[in-house]
Image 1 (tube, rainbow, N blue to C red):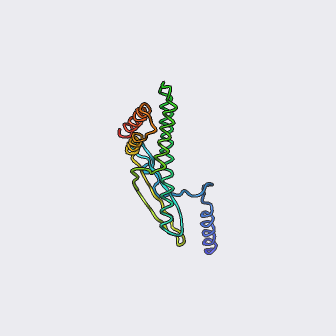
Image 2: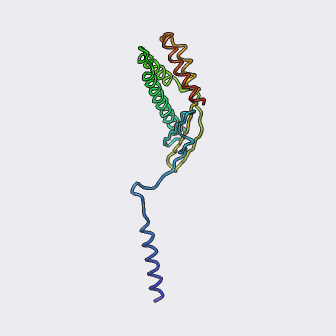
Length: 179
């Protein structure tokens, strides 16, 4: 009888383990650099890149490229919003032309080099076969907009009226980023 009670207790314990509920989506995975500290805000553009490779340096390089691409995308999206807001607010007949030159300037800046990038974190993992690297980067918004203003001033294709409008737009964005 005692062995039956032990056997019954074991079967009951094993069946309880098998009843553990699982999420249909799977287990929650916490990746490095997740959370509000690594998200863009009113002062910084931030992005996290991730890549895997058999070689550590290649994984790191790919992760940096991924993060820089995400940063560039954020900057471009922000500039489109700013240009659209400018067109909506302005009664200027040349507003769409100014917005187009402003966006063109942004693409030119993005194609050359993102300025003032800081690495705010890097984590490496090795599973015996591959390295996985996570990289977190940030750009101070005000520094990026100041660089764009400087580029606009040196661009011979931009006339004085358009330059003044672009500087006004960038100065407003710098003020927002510094507040």
